[in-house]
Image 1 (spheres, rainbow, N blue to C red):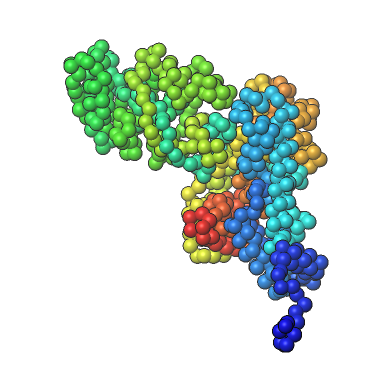
Image 2 (cartoon, rainbow, N blue to C red):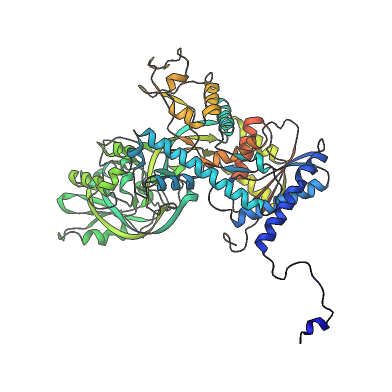
Length: 600
């Protein structure tokens, strides 16, 4: 007997088992068909205009939890403002110029082979063009994937008018802003030492470094003392330690700790070596001559007047005091930069030693072939040939690696473009304007102000294939930089018509006026700068793309997470003040990490 007929059961029109994927799509279609965002904007047209800005999405991979939360919070603020009758704009922006895009493009095109960018691509323009084309395709692909995922969250935005920074109009706008900064003397080109990755062929910033154990080669090198301690004889050496052999191809001071105890010890061939006391037993164990003895003891501070000769080139080096130098590793006399000391404290003047510096400029193949981390590297061989290599050994150490390919890094000196954050009293102007900015939480104001006060320079260019080229031209004959104030419009028109490929592929003489010649040598053979603008620089200037054709005064809100680049706030403020003399937004809200994402 069917007892259901005897019961007064409810009659339901919806199915018992819901197909959530189907219901979700039907709900989204309903929302999209209603055009609520467009209708509300039409009703609010002419009302108080508001822009809600966030750092551009990275056009790579699926949308992550941090970006999802960012967009949801932005959507809450947008819908609240819409219901209040405000005219709220939300134009999504994707940053195409992230390094992961180029990494994937290289992997796809070269079938995962380990290649050398500098040598393999130097004369292969077709290959570089294919890589850029692949990068552009990947950025469009991932931006569409993320756009679909965000739309599925029911977020209001002008999805059909979204911005991709690799679009020609955006690239042209960024070039204009770069040139505006150049004309105001906020952009400078300087030489700095940077961590360099052989495998990726890029300079690595501190945020891109991971530290892991590595069996590292250390060199103990004799530096002849040219001035000081003449009473010890003629063959007096400072025994200098470095765990970066390639660094000997540049001029750096020898660092000692002023608080450590040092000794001069006699060794064979009437030589005298100056080392920290903790290293004396190590020296004695290497010689069978029992005549080794300490002939003078001193504090590290007494070594400040010593002048040494570089073992590979005819140049004198000063001894500097550095309290970070220890005797846990090494001789107490260091040639490498301590982990606590910033690169900015040591200006590097690179010199040429035979083929060493030339090989460094050519790229990593020299070092792959010659095993720079092995005892038979070219620097060790040359030091041993000249009689200055005391010894070498390997030790397991925590060492900086590239976060993209997990390969060990070296230090390389190169010229790049920097944003001068203190030129033309920019820092003072930014701080004065920043005091009017509304910040939440209150601690954010202190942190951003501290970042503005602390930073003096910001690296905005790098040597890569994928990116917006720096629109600066040089004479091929004498490397003289041309003054192209009258020709930047030509570059912009070319980019607007054909994108960055149009500027990269065309010969400079075909777009520059015939009257332009090198102001130094009179030649008319030019080349474009080999650097491209960094992803961070493009991201910071994104507000200019975001506000294209927006002439009216806006009330702007910036919403971002702690997970985003910590310097994005201060750099956005500084760049906006340098270009237009006003802040890019009137208030900023910053929220914390999601539990389980980042260090929560």
